[in-house]
Length: 104
Image 1 (cartoon, rainbow, N blue to C red):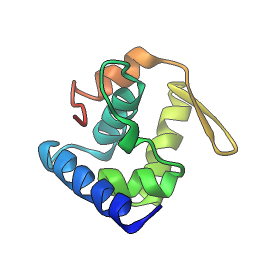
Image 2: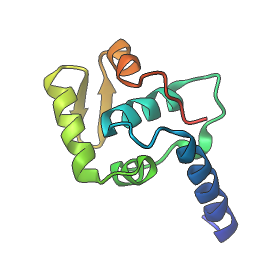
Image 3: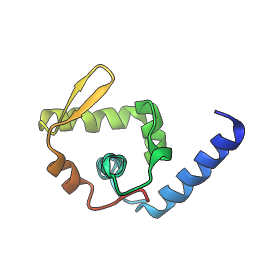
Image 4: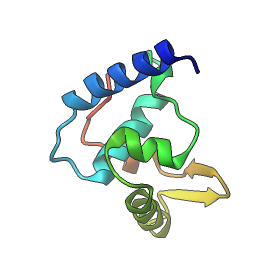
């Protein structure tokens, strides 16, 4: 990725995140992220990232904390995980957890 694209990504990300409630939990932010990238109504290509570490950075946490959220959701059967993939089993639960926050 060239420098201008990286800078553009960072600026968009910072602007987007500044609109998300800073007091929201990691679970709420991650659920909001999942709902945002799943929405066909939102131009969100710049939010799609390749790794758990990038998602953690995007929502302002560590990958370790995000893993704890994923483990809890797995136990609650909201998601299932295989290798580097997350399969959402209960979208309604994810939408409820997100508290209608979207990264737009």
